[in-house]
Length: 192
Image (cartoon, rainbow, N blue to C red; front, side):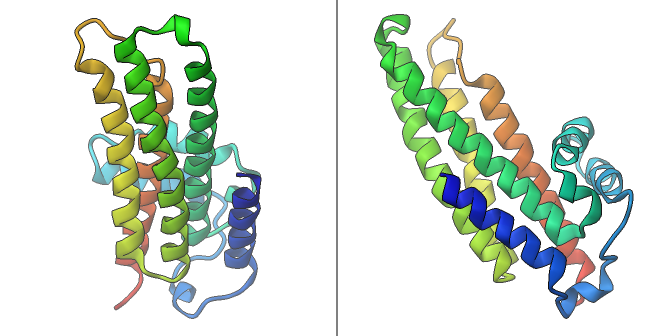
């Protein structure tokens, strides 16, 4: 997974250093771009979590001196890190077979499949985004949201079952929603 992080870091630098024809209409550097972007997304979508967006994007120092393309890549890299870390957490949980009944264990196995797919899908989203195939990037990020939702809902099928992945699922959904909103802003800021 480390090579994926290096790939995304390279992509982020690519967008920061190399000027792109279409991005000239978008302010390349804005001191308050994170706050403005998160606020715009929160204003457009009632379920969007402004504080989560702000806190998440601020953890990556380069996000303070980037453009919308760079912020979208930061959000996707954070989503990839979350999904990759969740795969590791699920592996660890699956090794402790005495902590879970057969239902919870089966749910964890399902979540493992969903998250392994999510990691690959996020990588595909980044590729589509870098190729300016924004519709595909949004579609694939939406599939990742669905995967995390499905993982969480699997545990809810049994009354009283508590998912050990609730926070990780929630965070992945929020990170993808952040990337989705930023891509939406990009597609509406760039003239066709």
